[in-house]
Amino acid sequence: MNPTVTFSMQVKGLSSPLTETFTLEELSLHKQMSTEELENRVDAIFQTWVWSQISFSRTINH
Image (tube, rainbow, N blue to C red; front, side):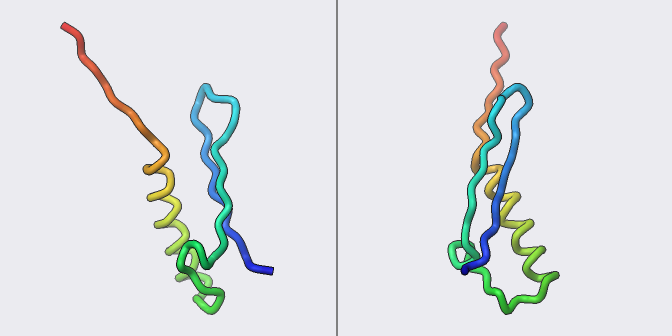
């Protein structure tokens, strides 16, 4: 069985979280990595994933 990583985020006011599961291979990660390296890489990938899910803007009307 291939290990997986699940990312999840919830936006206030929305009832359902956004969740995606990836295999280590899909994230270009390897089981042979040290725990610290794996955690650091997953954290960086997670941050990129979160920002790629967000679309926002602001408008000032005069």
